[in-house]
Image (cartoon, rainbow, N blue to C red; front, side):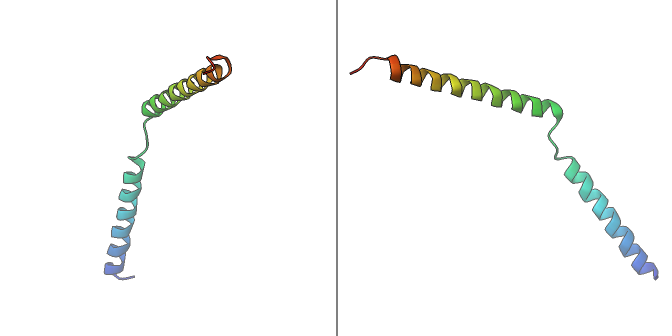
Length: 64
């Protein structure tokens, strides 16, 4: 194998490793994931409460 071919393989390998490192940096930290989960849970509870209110008023509210 010529030295040019070896250099190309080494350069390609380094490029692949660097690309994989960059992909790993895009992961969401655990603390941020927990905050997002908590926000989603709060939104769900608020939606359920709103639906419960609408159902109550439609069944027991004033009939106009």
